[in-house]
Amino acid sequence: MPLLKIILLAIIQGLAELLPVSSSAHVVVAEKLLGLDPSTPEMTLVLVMLHTGTMFAVIVYFWPQWRRAYFASSDSFKRFAIRAIWATFLTGLIGYPLQKFVAHVMFPGQPKAVIEDLFGRLDLVAYALFAAGLLILWAGLKERSAEHAAPDYARSLNRSGENVTFAQSGWMGAVQGICLPFRGFSRSGATISTGLLTGTARDRAEKFSFALAVIITPLAIARELLRVLHAGSEAKLAGASAAAYSAAIHSSFLAAGLGMVFSFLAGLAALRWLSSWLESGKWYLFGIYCLAASCVVFYLHHIGY
Image (cartoon, rainbow, N blue to C red; front, side):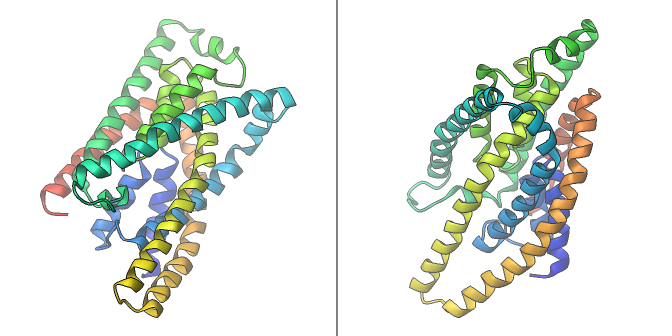
């Protein structure tokens, strides 16, 4: 795969992954425009490597805040761990069966169908972007309205401490599970918006949302690596050249490794942008962007991409 395409995808991934605009939607559209197939094991492997780069960007950017909020004492870590485990449990409880259900509905009679087979469907990406845009817009405008109606609104939220509540963490984890099957339904956009709608302060919603991302990203990476290995086994059974398949995967690893560096750097820039807009009350603008992006993706689907 040409390195220029990988670098371009890495920059798109790094910027969009950590902004609430769905990196998957942007990367899938970019892959389509570049003539690549988003549903192949090689491309999902590339996407996973790019996700790894942005995960490290999240850790580097948020570690000072996490250390103060979640690791200042054994009690604060215990409170965070309980909430993170509860949220992640709900993500798996909702997300895994939902992935199976969506794959079953979209591919009736195909027991081996997986959710990744839908990654190339721009119509589904557009619907998911539209839904995410509405959620982000709702949360942003509601919070903005409440803050203007009560000037002490933001300060009163910040006085309640560094952690989200148990109920808020549950809602954020549940919504994160709903995001898993749908490319275009931004994970960060949905979870932060859910936090805002349930009364979480902006900074706490942001910190906890990306802490959840760091927890589930290694699981997603492991799942995709297993998928690549499974695809290799099927290729051998089908009589394909093992050497040719190994060479393709090896090439993808090398290219994606370089892409991971670019996605890391782009991710750091995106996080600074996100924090700035979130803290200045501009969260709703990301929702407007998602709604506009959904229209563009619908158009691309209409003309045959």
